[in-house]
Length: 226
Image (tube, rainbow, N blue to C red):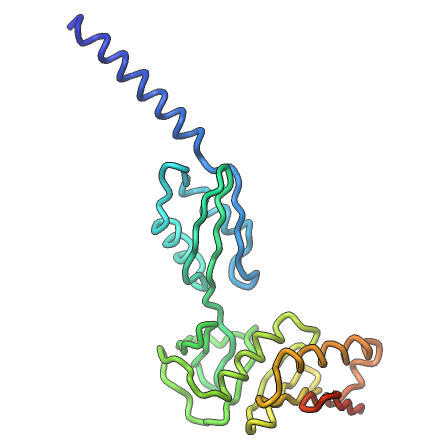
């Protein structure tokens, strides 16, 4: 028994040191990148902290599952340790648009999904093809893909989208809640059209409610007032 005592003491000391080091190596800071419409930094931090990630052990699968269980828009996450900071880039799977008057939605990965209750925060897209795809399919039609990318690009602009109608390649009509329209073309660079739209709105901010149409298909946008 006397011979075992020093061994037990040593084991106890080692365990104490290990526990101390393990706690010491807990991440203190979290640098989280995610789209604000999915999950906020504070919300993600609370969930990740609860998993107690440590420099010696980061259970990425458990953290990801915890995020997904609470916020279904989370698709994946990349982790990079820079002790004492853990950098997490959250990849989202947000709804982009509702397809016509159906319960079929398209997410940011261009995948269709079925949702029981219509989401009022998501614009409605009326594609040229009036037959909506089934759930769990990838959108491949070029005009529909362009329209979806247009909706994503306008999300942070000053032109609020109510619905979008794809008539043909040269006439993609975006309506705002006041029924003012912006006309886009899939044959013209999307970024340039968005910049032109922002420029028109910035110059007309005082009289923006008097605008009925902004045609962005040309080198210089054509603005029609009410």
